[in-house]
Amino acid sequence: MRRPVIGITADSEEQGGGYSALPWYALRHNYCDQVTAAGGLALILPHEQETVPEVLDLIDGLLITGGAFDVDPALFGASDRHASVVLKARRTAFELALLQGALARDLPVLGICGGEQLVAVALGATLIQHIPDAVPQALAHEQPNPRTEPGHTVAIEPGTLLHRLVGPGPVAVNSAHHQAVATPGPRLVVNARAPDGVIEGIEDPGRRFCLGVQWHPEYALSPADTALFAAFVAACGESR
Image (cartoon, rainbow, N blue to C red; front, side, top):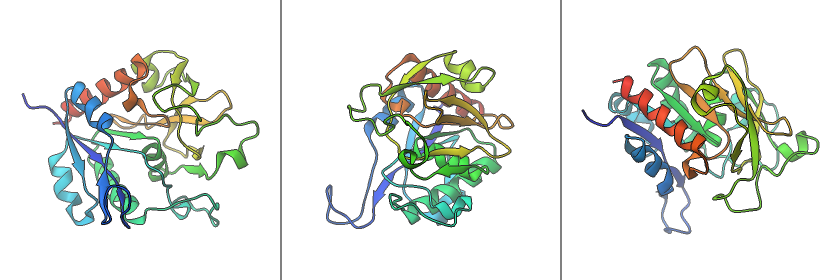
């Protein structure tokens, strides 16, 4: 039997700089490493919106990754934009079209960090645009220590898919975000929270596998992280 094909969205730099003076795509190895270790075939996706229908025909599941940018506040009905917000319009447009297509087909979806936020917004959530300005006594969600180490713990909500996959917690996680889900909307269930109350995970119980976490399980800091990837890839195998 062939491995399930997992479409993974890349980051991009439209102006160039760093890796190349020309525009480029990038993705850390660990996203692909975890998909491969869990039995999947990783397919990195460039941001060509006209290819979305063909991509959806190729993949068995969708992994939306994070990056140093934000969901456009206009997408969740905000009338203002915090000064800290950074947009990547082409990437967001591609990811949103791909996500909507995946949801329409009930393909398994895993959103990580900014990917979790996009999944949430696509399903009716709103976002906190800058945690330090909105959450009193907030933790350092942009942790000062390396991403290869935990930054804080999260509590796992009983009765959720995440709870069934990783156990009751608490789970030690790394943290690299300045935004988070504010209100989950009508479809979503909160499945994880940080000690300061910030929402760290969401899922749609009406779909086969639609889950997002605010931390970065691709670093595999705990058995919970590897269990999450294993369950996602297994669901993608069942979707064929």
